[in-house]
Amino acid sequence: MLCGVDEAGKGAVLGPLVVAAVGAENQEELAGVGVKDSKTLTPSKRKELCDIICSRYPYTVYLVEPGEIDLLRRQMTMNALMARAHARVITDLVASVAYVDACDVNAARYGAMVGENVGCTCRIVSEHHADKRWPLVSAASIVAKVFRDEAITELAKTQGEIGSGYPSDRTTITFLEAYLASNREPPSFARASWQTMRTLVAGREQSHLSSFF
Image (cartoon, rainbow, N blue to C red; front, top):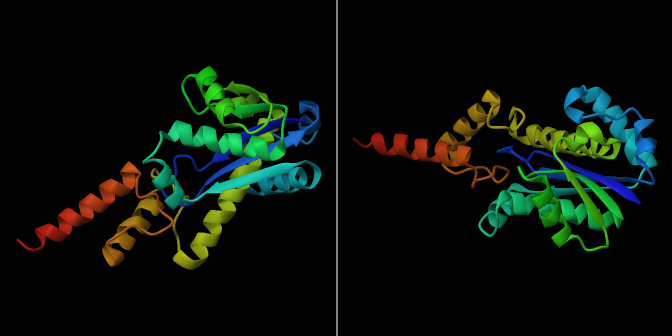
């Protein structure tokens, strides 16, 4: 079986990193579904395609929560963390060939990192922008994005408006600033090791300190 692997939420400061793998006997099966890079699709179309993919093809999803990311980043680089997560979903599907969207500037090096962590006999095809070239990776990108969006929606139900969870999102930053003002420490669903979070915490501490003078 072949599989495609991609992720959503790698650069987010809030919420999980979601890694997905989708399997099939050949790439053409997924091409017929009409999959494409998830970033080019509307949320409703992504959800429609995700439902089709998950009902017809083997798939697996791995959520890496913020606390685990913070812990693992003390032990390894983000690229190593990503390679391990990619390897995990490949192993879950017991794929013989896996197409992965490379998370390193050196695609071949990244493929080797994934291969070192895979728990089955599998050939790794590692490419940049693989989600644009290979239908299986496009399918994985859709599944990962939908599961990531659903996780953010669930958080918003209890936390209020948190935006997309990315540092570039002003709504997300506004939420974090307000949270720190009330709690003085990051929420459990934030990646405390992220520079964005460290900067906000440092700014809050400096503001608090200046109030004494």
